[in-house]
Amino acid sequence: MTTIGEVLIDLTQTGVNDQNVPMLAANPGGAPANVAVAAARLGAQTAFCGKVGRDGFGSYLSQVLQENGVNVSGLHTSKTPTTMAVVTLSQEGERSFRFVRGADVELCPEEIDIRSLANTKVLHFGSVSLTAGAARSATIFAARQARQQGVLVSYDPNYRASLWESEEDAVEWMRNPLPLVDLIKLSEEELPLLTGTADPEAASQHLEDSGIKLVLITMGEKGAFYRWQGKTGVVPGVATSVADTNGAGDTFLGAALSRLTARGDRPLEKLTAEELEKVLAFANRAASITCSRSGAIPAMPTLDELEEE
Image (cartoon, rainbow, N blue to C red):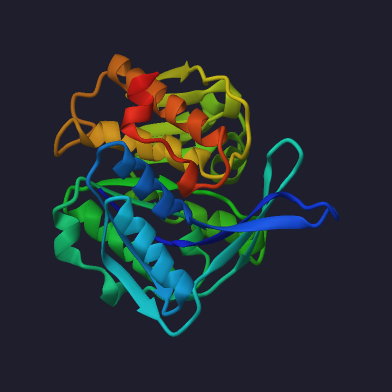
């Protein structure tokens, strides 16, 4: 599977010092990169396409991806600094974001390797790369090419209000690629933006009616809702002591995609609801481990950890 979009530095709050000053760690992150690493750690062959700066952070991110088994032949470099996201945490472990955009927005369609897309089972992207710059064109171009070549297209419309000029602008562009999408993963909070309703049944019906085959809705500790071939269900979450929710949704999706791609070249072909629920139970377990630890990529579990449970 291939993911496209942002890889960046998460300046993540790890606590406060004796003077009550926030302490930050420079963690590797970026939703599509997170998904690639999560899937790779759980046994999938993954590749990442994006752009970083020719700086220490860019070199570090490339190294992290490679150390986690992610192919970086599609990772390009720029004179523009590597993108950063400052992630601060509430006492309950909930995140707030502030982005310092850099090289990630400069990825252009000419830098997409069409031949490599033809050889992947899944192309995954998120909505952050739809916010600005050449990356918007590159992302939609890659999704369109993948769709034309029969590759499963996965989409996470992860809404970050600070990256958009207005909510109306966000809604327009987050909905724009939906006709190209086979699988969508979104949170409860994002349902009204995409569908106009907060009800999972009605929202997922709307998305299915628009042509999306598999709808996954993450609901935190309540688990994961799915709609597949006209049927819906909820797979319960896994109780855990939450240290940091950063990367949990990406772990969930990476874990689900790792299991789906293991089914063969057509990951959704002849998939039963029973099989899907086992996939989502596995993904919930993976996400719970990520929630129990700090950071995004550093917190993600390995296949051995899940098999030990």
